[in-house]
Image 1 (cartoon, helix red, strand yellow):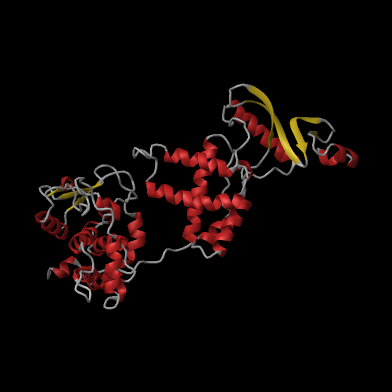
Image 2: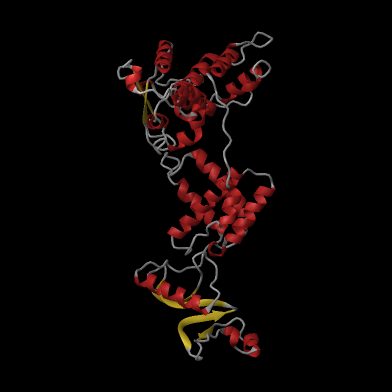
Length: 421
């Protein structure tokens, strides 16, 4: 059996005088292992690699395992070095350069994400970019001036613990990890780091959570919101000035399952009464960046018909902005109206106090599930690209109230018996 020797096997005098220099790693016969070096207890491999300018140069590469941690033994170092040599032969090694600091690289990454934002050609939606930037600020504060290749699992675990200790939800911490992963994966693709740290099993278990079920939003809730919007305050003033447009808006959300921003951008050209179809995201401006068609159900068809009778003659939008002036623009938001309506309705309808526009999307899906529609059809209407898997997970429980009714139909009689034979 070979006995491997490293810099640690040298004399104390040599370690003291050459603590910062590279030393050859020796095998059991005191022979140097080709291309393998050691300094301060860490292993390095010596390779000829092309630099950023395409010129070959000799570099000592720190040897790490698949998790990005320094290798601990000579055997591991030899194995890692051999793997790097194979990668070099296959032209799979990243260009060697000094990894930038995390804070500086986030700036570079965000500039790449924002490219084309002014012309609407950015890679992500403006709201998503703002959200990602907000999460990354926390990582910048935590990691300080750390270089990308020095970020390890211990840094990530420490931040997870810090955020959970501060009372943040597991979902928020998961988003922290998603956005950190975006930056590190981008750095990996650019050849700045060899590996992207992955969460350990214990960390994944700690962040595992079950999203709470949303209370069923019923047709009675929808009518109560509209009633509150049409009401007046004690001084006789309306709860919200645009109550009619607000009611049209929430009814549309409830009858077609559109997301908040998707509905605001609907044009009358998206409504096809002849084919009985509504196209959502005809310009591709949706969460999935693809348009979809919703077949008109009786409620949706009747509601769109009533809205068309009141259509503004000078606007192409279903919900034109009341302050559009000479420009034909759609309404920006109905959130302020929703706050006013909820506050007014709180005394009489306390169950409406925390309702949001997204509850109306859930209302549409819930009603479709309980009507017995297949999940694939519902998924195509609401823009889910998983073929109905999410609907089955989140909304399948809504059909529980129908199970007892269905059970009563199970009589265990043969078809012949039913026919009186």
